[in-house]
Amino acid sequence: MKHLAPLFLALAIGTVNAQSPRLETVARGLVEPWGLAFLPEGRMLVTERAGRLRIVEADGKLGAPVTGLPAIDVAGQCGLLDVATDPKFSDNRLVYWTYAEAGDGGNGVAVARGKLDGHRLSEVQVIFRQLPKVSSSLHCGSRLVFARDGRLFIGLGDRFSRKDDAQDPANHLGKVVRIEADGRVPADNPFANRAGAARELWSLGHRNVQGAALNPATGELWAVEHGPQGGDEVNRVRAGMNYGWPLLTYGRNYGIGTRIGEEGPKAGFEQPVKHWVPTSIAPSGMAFLTSERYPGWQGNLFVGALRGQALVRLTLEGDRVTGEERLFTREALRVRDVRQGPDGLLYLLSGGADGQLLRVLPR
Image 1 (cartoon, helix red, strand yellow):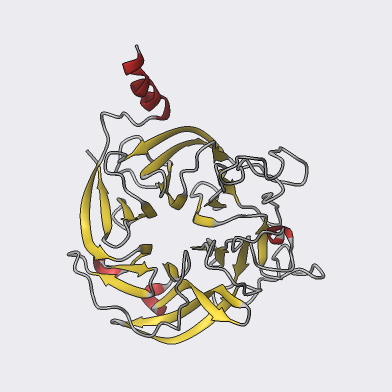
Image 2 (cartoon, helix red, strand yellow):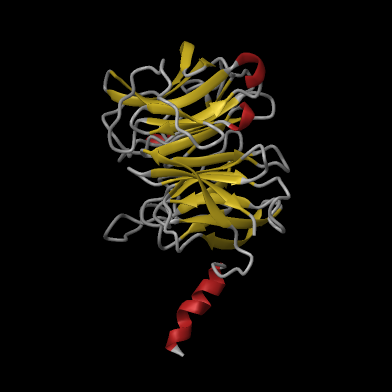
């Protein structure tokens, strides 16, 4: 019976599915693609971590790099990261992006915006800077999500701090922040009137936010973040809440496997709606599926996996994760971003030096 064990394991996590979709390559030749956003007429914006923003035409042709980006500090896990278009892009042509910005003390994640005119950005302005800047090339995060009210959420990493910086409300390390689209601080932010706290903060206690999206049923922000050795988390990111890192975590110290903090639950800290142990999948981009293009999948949550080399499908009942399926495991994709396109199909960014933009086609 030993030869049946792998099949039983596959069935347990849902990798065997007779109705699995297939992949179609939209574009090749991307170098470390990181973030994806959609433009009118079937075009797409893709960031490359080395500092290039590319337009992918509807036929998959890669355009020359978009000009007008500010200086980007490229090292380790940092560089040009996420990209998003303004909810009113057809009127204002505004594009937003996150990137590592050098400065006193090292670097920090910044958010800039500019008007896209052909293959050029104009009127570029920095609307947020993560403080303090630190000497690190790790845990830069980061994701951008527009809320229904037009405000902007930014998911940030702790920059691989060895201290409890993610627990300190005076800084932006290991936090989710919320700003107006022009960078102003909303008056109703949970820390806006708290002495000694950064006014932009929405939540704290995050390790390295790699994916984020609005739950279409509630409008609430959900995010996924890397744990260390195990302990990757999916969280409902609520105003003023503490998500525990590094005091509460299911993860362990690299290599030696010893505890980092408590596991919880514990008063004053939020528990994840999903976590992975003992092995990290290294989650990345995420998207809720709202379309009916894939039978039986509407309302599911999709998470890219880097180490796990798959697209992970999570079934939900309200705010509870009820099941998991790992798709495209044979293709061994390092999925960096996941988005639902205007056509209702899922799109993936995958790969390193020979990165691809992929479309998920239903069977």
